[in-house]
Length: 348
Image (cartoon, rainbow, N blue to C red):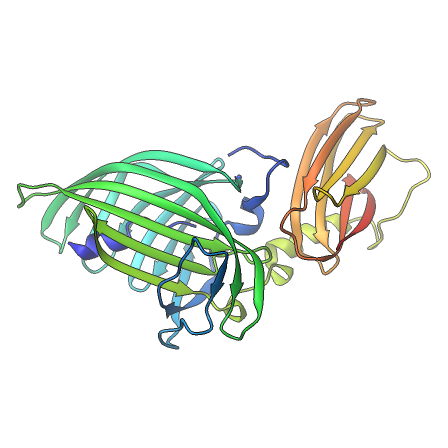
C-alpha cells in the first residue's frame, strides 16, 4: 500500500497579474515534450528555512532520468512524464495543468474528472483547490477507488547553496497537499493517505530544481524522498527553444535594432521604481491595436511577457514586477507589429 501513495500527485499564474511576484508561468515553466532531466537523491530538506544548504546532503551520485513525451501533435497540450519507472499523463486545458492518470509497476489509477494540479500563472501567496475521484488496480489484481481533495499553495522562499558551494536566490517553493481515502476491494477498512509534494523553482530554469514527497497514513510518516536537479543537467532559459523563439519574434522586421521612430504608433512614459522594484509604463496609441511588453535581461532571458489590446488615443498604464530578479541590467521591449522600442534599466 505504501507504494500506492508515494507518487500519486506530481506537481509541476489563475489570472494574469503584475502586482505580485510570479513563481511559475506557462511561457517559461510549462514542461516541453522531448525534454530530459537528471536528478540525484538527497537527504531531507527543511523548507521552512531561509537558507537550504546542499553541500552535505547528496546521498549518492547516481543520476535518475526524467523524460517528457508528447502524446499528440500539440507537444505542449498533452504529454506523459516518465520518472523512475512511473508514467504520469498530463493535459493542458486553458490555463490549467491537469493530471489524467498515473501508473507504476505496483498500481495504476485513472481519474474520472481530470485533477487540476496547477494554474498559470502562479504567484507568491497563490493557492488552488480541487477535488478528485479515481479508480485503479493494485498489483494488477486488486481493484480500488480513491476520492479526496488537493490543494496547491505557495509555501516559502529561500537562498539555495548548491553542492559546489555557490548560492542561488531567490528560490520559491510550492507545496501540493492531497488528502485521499482509498478503498481496496478486499479490505473492509478505508485507508487515509496524505501526500505533501514540495517543488522549488528559480528564475532562469523551466523545471523545479528541488522536490520532496512526504507520504503519511493517518499521522504516521510512511515514506519520504527528496531530489536535487543539478543545474548543469537542465537547460538554462537563455538557450531554451521557446525563449529564443520569443526573442526572434521581437526582432522580426527590425534588422535587429530597437530604434526610436520619428512617426510613432505609441507614445509612452517609462520609469523604474527601485524602492518597490516596479517598472511603470503609461502609454497611448494612434490606432486600435495589440501592444506587447517584454521584460528581459540583457543576456536574453525573458522574465515577463504581457499583451494588451488597446483603443486609439486611450491612455493606459501597467506595472511590471521585478521583485526577486537577480541584480543586473534589464530591458523592456515595447512592440506594435514591426514597430519596436526599448528601455534599459539596472537593478542594483
